[in-house]
Amino acid sequence: MALIELQEVSKLYGFGDATVLALDEVILSVDKGEFVAVMGPSGSGKTTLMNVIGLLDRPTHGSYLLDGRNVARRRPNQQAKVRRDRIGFVFQSYNLLARLSVLENVALPLAYKGMTPVRRQKRASDILELVGLRDREYFMPRQLSGGQAQRVAIARALINKPSIIIADEPTGNLDSTDSKVVMELLADIHRQGNTILLVTHNPELTRYANRVIYMHDGMIVGDEQTAIGNMAKGARRTHFQRRKVTDDEIVEGVSALMRDVPGKELASKPKKKAKRGRPRTKKRPVGRPAGHRLKAGSRQRREKAKKR
Image 1: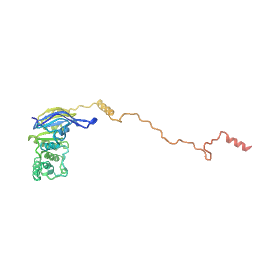
Image 2 (image 1 turned 45 degrees about the horizontal axis):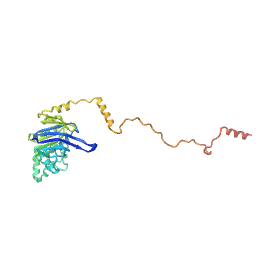
Image 3 (image 1 turned 90 degrees about the horizontal axis):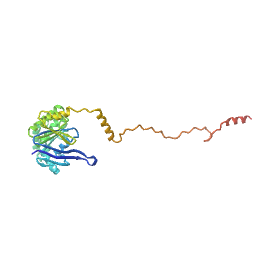
Image 4 (image 1 turned 90 degrees about the vertical axis):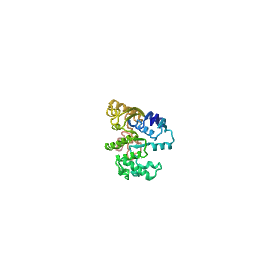
């Protein structure tokens, strides 16, 4: 029997014309002890799939079986208990509490179990020893490097001894050296019998997985079994043999954008409007009434009359 089984799971966000189909009738089965890498472009539904499996989100349609039990429709408090005891999360942004020390961050999940402070700090210290950070117990998160912070996040995910580890882009903010340290740590956890679900854009990280799932537009479009240590063929083909975009496709995309975006239609340049103001009037001679006009030759006739 599979550890994780999704049966025609769909997830919708929004309503009406704003509805977004994040997962489209996904069918997935994961056995205990597998290391599964999930790949796909941004917006393909990878994170939504992990949120459904990690009980952070409910599917709109379909069923989710964990150890043969339908956990998708349980009450929120029951889901929280399953999530606490069975699933560990490692996020790209670490999600460490800035006001707590490294030891307190790692021990925090045990507080929800009601464990005494002494016991949970002892347990947290032992987990930090496994990830090589026991000498950083009383450091604050801001005093750690990116790789150290991610190892603290892994220690926190392991504190409750979960059977499933969900790692969403755990090396996205790390350099190549720290990325290798984090992935070797996940590989050690996998060798101890844990099930690992890894979301990644890096094809090199598929070397740590024995199965690679490819997603696109909310659907699983590929499922490849691979040997640990070898890069998946699908990941190599997708990332190293990308098809070049032609000029015609670029022009077609721009034309489609101009049609879809309102207010972006091409139009001729509008003519300038004449400025409005008071009409100009001719200046009249000083001392003459308005509208007075001398008749032609009147001045010459007056001068002749004076001579007579």
